[in-house]
Length: 269
Length: 250
Image 1 (cartoon, chains in turn yellow, purple):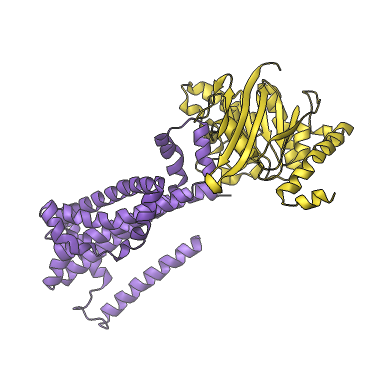
Image 2 (cartoon, chains in turn red, purple):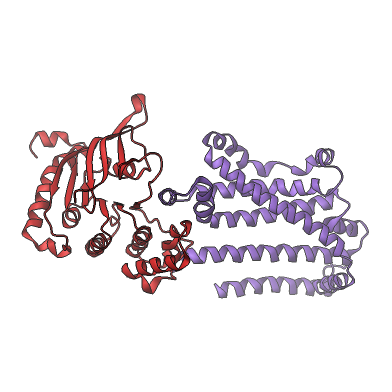
């Protein structure tokens, strides 16, 4: 995992200007290595989504810079980066097959190759029975799988996921986590996952980045030490509880700050 | 829904049957109205004899041009206004009050500009329809989830491609509602314009029959206009239903 996929150097983001300026993020320094799975947790409003969108090129940083495979990310999303959003981003006017083929049809790719990639992604994500269904006929989890499959077929080398399972129940999230691990192993892509769920971050990632309250900075990057063959079964592992507890111990004070309860921290609550 | 549709048809059929009965029984005298069956019979004769070919061609050409211009310029205008906040703030109150604009009073001015031809009437139909289409487009664009635009950017779509492949399809149900209004306004604008101001078209033929006390012709033409308006609206409604059903079927 020595190859560098992306680098963030002194990245910060300020919204607005003058007295109304809001310092949302940073400065953040982070190296994303090829093939690693990194998850980021932080209090609400700490700039997690802003960080992800800055890496993607959807938002320009106010300070610092981002590079993807050595080239600066500026103003547009580089080829090789795929993004899965928290909200349902499936296109309601397209069926599952066409949703997944959306990006491929813009590329100079032969129809047979498109068909092969889409069919494989549909099968991989367990959507074979719903290839001709429209998003409105699917559950929230299935729609999110459609969005993941739409990203997968583009064969990205860096996959950015912004709380993709945030709207799902706990059981579905665990199972979707397994599918995400399978996808990560199979593609060899670097995965950058934003999540508000500490257990999800610890269960899935090689490294968990813990962010401070706004303006978000990394206060610790924790190595989980899981093998690549891990799954949701590791929630029964003693190390899982230990890691989850450690992440929460670093996060608790920041979460209280984000809630405006600094006085409770000083009082030792 | 089938039950509701059947009930709706039954209400219309009942009203027509009642009208038939009242006119046949003399409760409504023939100078005021002729029976619906007589309207249909007279219309059939006029259609078979080709009397209506020229006015129908004239009117439907005018309506079609007014409708197409309303839709194209209305959607383009909606896209531009939506993309520019200052323009939006400027025109929003004007769009909200466009219903109050009596476009017909501009007919003399339109003749001065376009000449004594079909274009003043087309402009009246267009004036009504385009504003409705702009409003429908803005409504639709306001409701396009921001995340879909982000997906477009992630896939490297340029502005024009994003509009064509993402924004307009996402706004399609609202655009369909705009199509319906634009058609209705184009229809009303052109036929009313012909009725009051023009020397050609179906609207003028109705006015001419009215002035000549030619009730069978006047009612036959009115029946034709109503049937055509309903038929076109039903076609757009079915298209709208198709869009909605596909997106929200469970």
